[in-house]
Length: 61
Image (cartoon, rainbow, N blue to C red; front, top):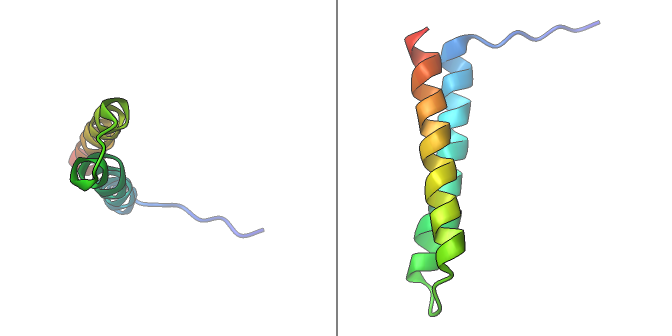
């Protein structure tokens, strides 16, 4: 019935924002805590970089 189409720029901005959330919650947050879980920090960094890269690819379209 209702069809929503996202432009590549809008989708790029959404993915970039999700990457920022992962960066803050899974990378910066654990680094500021008392006990550092390095697997969570590494996972947060990798996911953030992947999402930012996808965002850049979509923005270039």
